[in-house]
Amino acid sequence: MRTRLTALALAIGVTVGAPASAATVTGTFSPSGPGEVSLAMLFPTDPGVYELSFEFSRPGAGHISTHLMESYEFYYAATGEHLGGDDHLYDEDVFFPAPTSYGSTFFTIGRPYSVTTGFERTEGYFWNAKVGLRGAFSGPAQVTYSFTVDHIRDVPEPATWALMILGFGGVGIALRRRETRRLMTTAHKSGTDCSPDRVAIAPAAGPARARHGNVHTGSYGSSGASSSARRWTSPLGREPSLTAYLRARQRVGVR
Image (cartoon, rainbow, N blue to C red; front, side, top):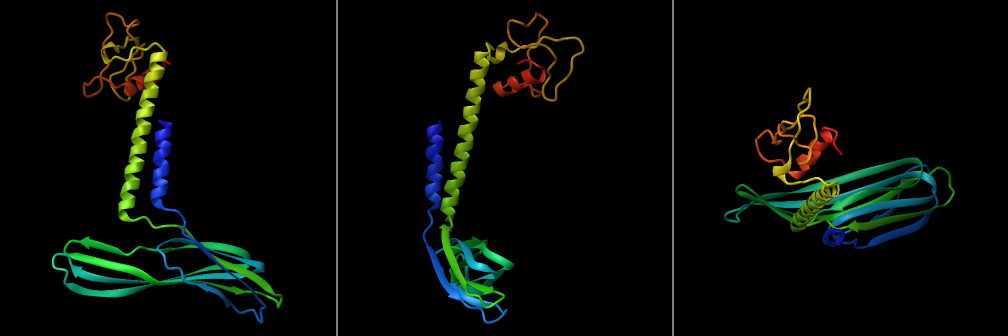
């Protein structure tokens, strides 16, 4: 079981995709005043999630800016007739107040997409991605800086998401079956007869009704059941499952 779960987890990891690449810009800068200065600019192109990070040789104020364009068009789903389109600009600025020597944030470039809703189909893509680093420093002392754009993972496609969901569902089913087998093994080792037709409850004085089922305080098992004992059933009258049976044992204090 453990081998199968490990293999499934590895398969899910491979499906998501490995990091692609990283790019780093380094340089030196001698401030001439307290104002903010552009230090580096990079242009990622591949769809995915990026980590943007910087480091200064001495504290200052950092500023990471991101820029991304999205273009999309609308069509009649049935005929393919073009209905129109538009562009959308995504700009974001992340500030790191002084004194800061390093910082990081994240940036995502989505995959081209095609989505049909009712009679309309929308097609779009992302382009003109730019990420930049700016800094501000007090004093004229020279600053060494680095700016890294690291492509940490790909953006999963819809088919990949479906496979991931199926994979997680398979893991859950496998774990549930494993827990059921563990409960059955525990019950057999304790000498409990797990056959539903052998489960009985011996009534005792002052019966206490449990939250689920018609359970009275007493003992379980075929050997301890008296002639007045009655079989336990669920509120719907069905035979108890092994899990319900073991939980009922716990509620009445039988280990």
